[in-house]
Amino acid sequence: MHGELRSLPSGYETPLGEGGIGLSAGQRQRLALARALLSDPDILVVDEPTAFLDEAAEGQVLAALARQKGRRTLIVVTHRAAAARLCGQRIVFGPAPAGAGGGRGASAAGPEAALPG
Image (cartoon, rainbow, N blue to C red):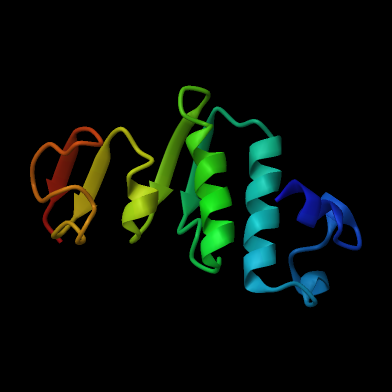
């Protein structure tokens, strides 16, 4: 991911808004996540961190997020089971998605609280 981002016209400083018109949605997403990780926050909140990524990029992003365990509080808002499995604790609004680790009880990935949808 680092090599691809460094190859952008302005590297990590490439504009994401109107000036980032030449970037794909996936490139914008990876660049925004990289910037967030480099800022070294105590708490990192990511919303659908793999929504616009192909399978290879999704694997890279999930691996990068997995490396954050124990280094910071990571809050992941997602519909994807692979991203949900990153978390030691999960809160499920409504029924748990298929493959997210079970329904309304404890799961292999950690405790899970279910809230009605």
